[in-house]
Structures are given as C-alpha cells and as structure tokens.
Length: 276
Ligand code: 13P
Image (cartoon, rainbow, N blue to C red; front, side, top):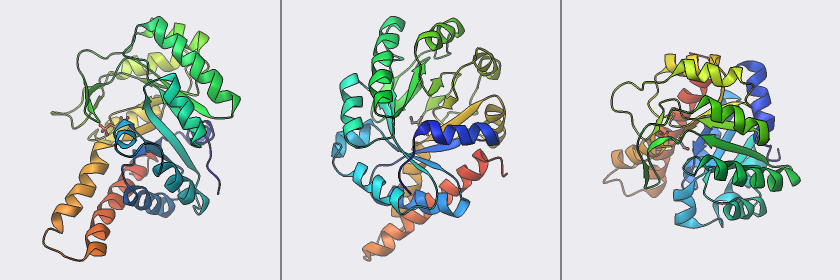
C-alpha cells in the first residue's frame, strides 16, 4: 500500500487505545527487519529517519527504501522525520516524500518554538503531511546531540501552544530521556494526564528504550499514542553482528542482526498494542 500520514495511524491508535511504534532506522536492513515484525503483528508502523541517519547518508537513499517497503507492505507505513532541526530541513523532507515531519523547537525560547512550528505546520499541511511538535525538551543523548537538565513540560506552555499551533501530535517531556535509563525511569504520569485534559492532539513519548511494560501501559491509558524506540533497535542490530564475529558469510551475519531487530520490534509492538 502507499505511505500513510501520521495523523491517519494516530486515529487508529486513538480508536483502539494503543500506541503506534516509531522505530528509528539507520540502514537498509533495519527497516526490512521492522517490516517483518509489523506484518507478523498486523500493526501500522512509523519508520523514522533521524538526524544521525541524515548526517550519515543525507536524504538520498533511506526515503526510497521506506517508500518501496511501504508499497509492498500489508500494513500502513508512515515515513517520519525525527527531531527536525529547522524549517528548511522539514521542507527538504516534504520534497523527499515524507508523510510526517517532526519539528523540534523545544530547545528554543517558547515564542520561537511557536513561530517555527506554525510555519512548519502551514507548509506541511499544504501538501497533506502531518506534523509532530515538542514541548519540554527530552534530555539524554541522541545521534551525538546531548541535552541535560529538567525536562518536565510546562502545562501553561502546553495550553498556549495548542491554542495557536495546529500540530497533529505533540511530544512532551515527563521525565523521559533518550538512551538507556540508569535505573527505573521516573515518569510524571499526573503531568501527562493534565496535558491530555487540556485537549492536546495525540501525545508522543520519546525515549521508549528501556521503559518497563507497566509504565508503557499506564502512559498509553493516559493518552500516549506514539512511542519512539531508537537505542534498543540499534543495540539489537549491533548485538546480532557481534554474535556473528568470525562468521565469513555476509548473508548469515546480516540475517542474524535482522532477526534480533525483528524479535525486539515484535516485543515492542505487542507491548504498545496492550497484548502483554
Ligand atoms: P531511545 O533512543 O531512548 O529509544 O529514544 C528514541 C527517541 O525518542 C527518538 O526520537
């Protein structure tokens, strides 16, 4: 089937009280492995191209890979930009065929985040592409970019933001972080519930790697509709490669790495679909 928008799959998630996984992809094998999982679990999936993948390969190859995988897929696929850094980058992604872009202005002053997010929404909506925005910067390290400090979203900012920015999804900082958590994550569920009560668009949880199943389920019950997973995907692939050290058959080596990714993706999908 053709690629679908983020807005479409989030409507499914809202109806079924589940969350759709947004898996970061960094090479050709990872999205292939994820598609096997999504089809086996019959679940829509968001294939996410982030800043690391763009720095490594530009916007030349991965968008083509995602489009072809979607065309032959039995489940809906979204091509999504993760943590878009500028208006210009989001426009380049519209041209490259993305069906969803994230503009992350959370590290900028509020007024600038509102202004840039508004411009991105206007351009993306003009060509039928969904937009995710962010409030309350997510801490941790992603794609070599490090952010630290408190990241709890300010409820008054949420209220003012959604009054003027017509985004299709909103990522909020509630104590979540990119990378592997040291100990159990400390998520502020009361704040999440309060965000939802303000009438936000579907909410997004970044930093999905390592969040225990019970916390994931609670977050979904409070309105999280998209959950991002990057670090665990990369580790699964790398561990598959490491397990094959010494093997001189390239297909067997990549096959082992892909199997690990498929297994991980199936586990996350079941967790996000409340299937235990
Ligand atoms: P993790 O790397 O912690 O899974 O976070 C992924 C993410 O939020 C991508 O935006």
